Amino acid sequence: MPTLAELAALTGGAVDGRGDLVVTGVAAVEDAGPGTITFVTDDRFLPKLAACGASAVLLGPGRDRAGKDAIVHPQPMAALPRLLAAFAPEAPLSWPDPVHATAAVHPTARIAAGARVGPHAVIEAGVEVGEGTVVGPLVFVGWGSRIGKGCRLDPFTAVGARTSIGDRVIVHSGCVIAGDGFGFLPVPGVPVKIPQIGRVVIEDDVEIGAATTVDRATVGETVIRRGAKLDDQVHVAHNCVIGEGALLAGQVGFGGSVTVGKGVMFGGQVGVAPHLTLGDGAQLGAKSGVHRDVKPGEKIFGNPARPAGEAIRLNAEVARLPKLVARVRDLERRIRALEAGAADKTDA
Image (cartoon, rainbow, N blue to C red; front, side, top):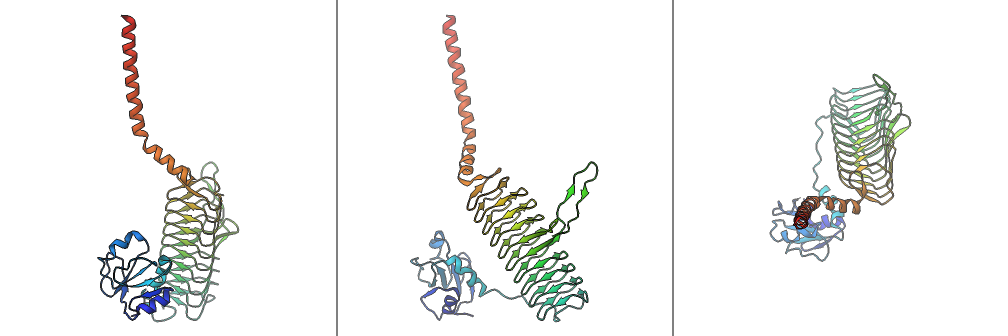
């Protein structure tokens, strides 16, 4: 088990207290017990620290550590991934041989030294699997595809033909990469399928969540740029380009040929119409319906999506509508009463 000083060196923080304290694990403030280290990345949780059972805490400078030994870091949230990684157990592989006896690997496929292919996986002709990559049980990799070094394809993943996957890519269970794009000619009767002859390119350090789909291009490429992170159940349509370092929360969906810039952030269930461009650093609030291009750095929200401040004001006004309607009806009743009284006086 690491000491507090070792964890501080790993995270880039400084020890405040006993550096020789042995730390047995990481836990949230509400669940932590003796021997563990907890973390406070938001000052709203500082009042809970005094009653917390943890022996140590990761927190920002100048914060009250409630008598606990601490790692002090100027950006505790940035340090947290390294702290968690120090205690992440590495799951043992359930098969002893590099290629499991039940895997179907075509003779022309090339499996690099140190790569592993799990039970009942299917590797088609001309596939290349890089060093240290793990192709899990029941994974399918289509002909002519290339998978780089240090990747992980979890069980039940399907990778279509001619796909290129870079290094250190993680694809979670149930993903379908390079299925046909949604291309049909809407003629009378049965729509005519448009052949999807392009491919998918996934660059280095991408992570793709469970049950996500990335469609092959009609022609050309559908591209996920370096470092992009896609949550579960995201749909990337044909010929989309997802920018470097983009963050996509669950159930985001794209129409075809959308271009996403660097570092764009999507809340859950955002829908983007086809052929739009979303500029670098844009932020799209959850459930937004995007029907226009988005400028770099712009924050939008709502359906149809508007500048975030405007959308929030409109939502607030809509919430006041019931009271406004009641007030108008009351005023109408008063006016009718006044009109009736005036008519009685005229008749008299």
